[in-house]
Amino acid sequence: MLRILSRPATRLMERWLPDAFIFVIVLTLVAMLAAIGIQGTRPDELIRIWGDGMWGLLSFSMQMLLVLVTGYILASSPPVKRLLRALAGRAGSAGAAILMVTLVSLLASWINWGFGLVVGAIFARELARQVRVDYRLLVASAYSGFVIWHGGLSGSIPLTVATPDHFTAGIIGVIPTGETIFAGWNLLICAALVVAIPIANLMMMPPRDETVLVDPAKLGDDTPIPPLPADATPAQRMEHSRLLMWAIGIPGLVWLVMYAASGGGINLNVVNFGFLFLGLVLHGTARSLLAALDDAVKGGAGIVIQFPFYAGIMAIMTGTGLAATMSEWFVAISTDRTLPFWSFISAGIINIFIPSGGGQWAVQAPIMLPAAQELGADMSKVVMGVAWGDAWTNLLQPFWALPMLGIAGLKPRDIMGYCVVVLLISGLIIGGILWVI
Image (cartoon, rainbow, N blue to C red; front, top):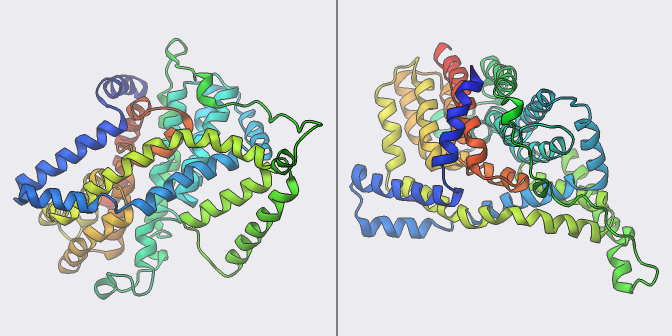
């Protein structure tokens, strides 16, 4: 059944979904027209808001580029390559490869979303080296696990409301993670996704004659670094020196241990720091690391050019009040029981235009939380409704897929047909549980 459904979805995306850069341009124009038509924003004011907001994601853009680069450096180090090769060797069939990469991605994304994006992509590449499997579905399966992130340990919205003196503390106080991330109903959603998504991906496997294998060029250069020549220059000896790399890499790892011992939490900067310094130590030489870096940066072009446009879209949605208006539409049709569900749906729609958990919460919280108070709705469920909506439509929005696609060497159109099917299934699971509870 799902194989039959995935065929037209894949063909539709391959035919109509443009390059991710064209997608963000179209999305910008849609947001502009909506702001003019719905909010009545003057064109000159709209252009000012858009232009002023274009550089609002510069810091985050660099973080995302480093997720790709440092993750690739770590995963391409000789010890990690051997580990991934050994794990991939246990996948004796295409079906096993699909199941393994989905489960690894789900688990890694629940722990930390940046970790999940990188680990899923790298593991998919290694599986493609060893197993005859449809590469598009393999990478889509790796990305599908990302949907769980906002219900996990790095969920920015539940972690925000669990922090003392957060910006909505005056409305809701502090909501501990025991009522959000570790609530029984949220763990039920996570467990249901862990069961359903791998099965769904497995059921979408194309028949052997329709399987699209990976182009070897997309898997990178796996040839070993040439050894140091006998007549090496001092510069070449420094580039091949393990002592030099360990002299800087080991202090970095010591800092990580000190940070963890002091109770520091996992965030994107810590993940990138860990990837970088583990990569330095495990590569052992600057020459090995720089070869991996050369390969890694090739996939980062999409992040560099597209994220400013997403910042502009976010500025339009927030600066014109368009996101707030859309949220109010759903509040108007909600009751105390249904507000968590409609929070999920509204967040899913707004996430297409504001693909940032923190940015989206800043827009929706001032509307959803007073509405929850007025209706007498369960505040923790409304909070997680927004969180899950933000994560859910990432399966349709290529913003977060860019680092993974850069590593895998694919375009959004290659995987989004499969992701749409998972979008429908995960939406029924998340929305259904939010509606019932």
